[in-house]
Amino acid sequence: QLPLGLLTAATGHPMLVELKSGETLNGLLINCDTWMNLTLREVVQTSPDGDRFWRLPEIYVRGSTIKYLRVPDEIVDVVKEQQVKDQASRGGRGGGHQRGDRGDRGGRGMRGRGRGRGRGGGGSGGGGGGGGGGA
Image 1 (cartoon, rainbow, N blue to C red):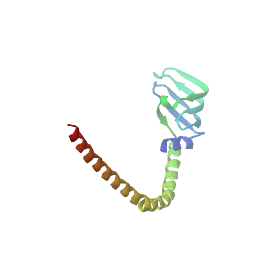
Image 2: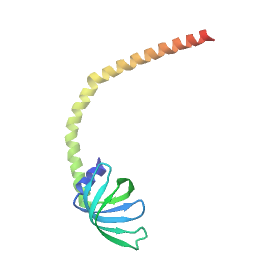
Image 3: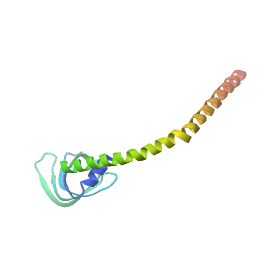
Image 4: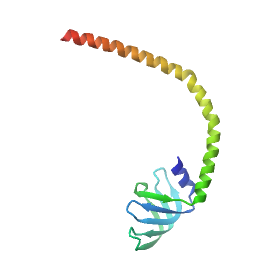
């Protein structure tokens, strides 16, 4: 959740993207999706050796080609603060779920497992006896 939340928060801000090929892209993040595919605008692309530069109005980057992303520090801070708030609110809801899990579901699970073992034991015994008879 953190990487995508961070990218979503960085929409409209400048960022650096390093590709697995060694090329770097500096531009404004316009869009990102769940596969971390990015759309950047006002891009400066740098060759892997750092000798050549290109200005591009817009570029689409496939998420699987990305090695590294550099997001402004202030965006990271905002996302961290938001996560702290989200965790605090989730704590209350999580407590309710835990109580439910400890009740019915836990009891049923135990009984289910007990029956499973009983059947398995009986099957093993029967299988052993049947195997002996066949020999």
